[in-house]
Length: 265
Image (cartoon, rainbow, N blue to C red; front, side, top):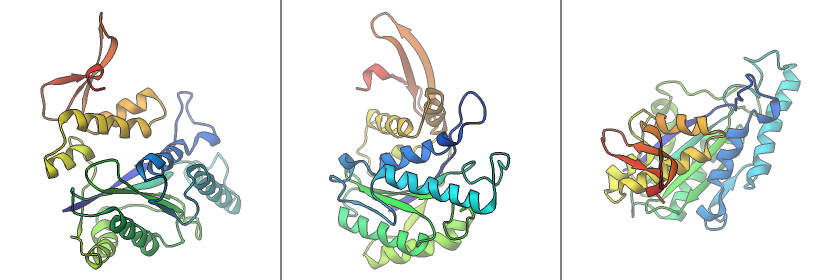
């Protein structure tokens, strides 16, 4: 059974309090870089967008849309609640299939058709299919601001069943795939752990590596990285040893054993 998850891309904050405008979308930029990475997408062949498949160009286009709507609406930094450069910057959909359930071209078609039907040209988006894992999985990152109306996309409880699932079901069935199941992000189970439960092939070490990779790519600071890992349900302890120096110890959800970062490769 395929699953999908909706992750929120928040604004970037600095230790000095309210950030400067140029840093507002750093998480958005990192998300685009992560999903459009040529090493994960067969040299960029498995990417698509309604603006650009170049991560930086897509990022600047999304930021420009936010700035344009600020100008149109006469919003300044004093209008923090309404300002399009503050608050939610975008959204990240992750769609995963079990090993052998879907090939890269079919996954590409499903994700492309979903973007075209659900996001249309109202929201700027980029998508990619990653082939760096045993299971086929795809990513969609889209701007929080509707470029036609200036309103921000919001996900409310029940929206998946009402508005999103009918679209994904129809597209998946059209391509001979099972319907997608929505999995809400909740503490205690990470994306990698869920896939391990499904296919039984990922070791604990691979799960932690995968989660660390994801958490790093969605963090600007060490503190944000730690927060991301804790949101996945990890217990984290800092330590120091004579042989390895400073280290981090990770304890997976519902496990007692810790794994030191110097043993993770």
